[in-house]
Picture 1 (spheres, helix red, strand yellow):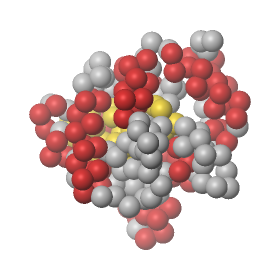
Picture 2 (cartoon, rainbow, N blue to C red):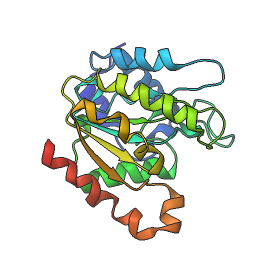
Picture 3 (spheres, rainbow, N blue to C red):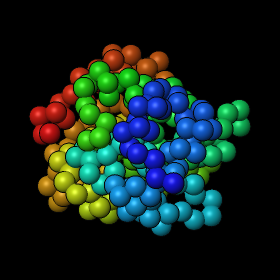
Picture 4 (cartoon, rainbow, N blue to C red):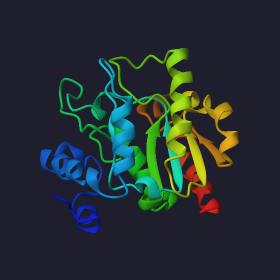
Length: 211
């Protein structure tokens, strides 16, 4: 079943809405939308035993996105199993049921960046049961980002969100995209560096100059 994109957005576009199984089911039914087919195939190619790669959120821009927001590594709430206390979504989404996703949702609104012009992903595309980032998986993930960028129809910019994502910068200049950076909107950054955390919307707002 194909869900009309505008109807789905009106129904479920709100922080932490992915906690609702009906919302997750609706979102999964949208993966065969034209803007999502290539990205769903891309995510599927990255999956292997022990590596859970989430799908892209169909409410974002898909292959029509102009800006790639590149985070560091998926957390357990991007998996269907979740974190042991709550079920996850199986998507990388600003609507996920966790504080980082909620911050992303709110910061995007504050930065006034249209959702349909964005896509979210991670340098390291899959969750392997640990938040530890190994050097080899970071290097391999950065190469995968290059492949992802070439699936987008009219990309303009990449936003490297967090220190680990910033390490992918050396792989990006040949794409010709404008590169921005910001701190990561996680509770850890908020606790340690509250000023950096509060500055994230203003950093993201700079993207509008290339849209």
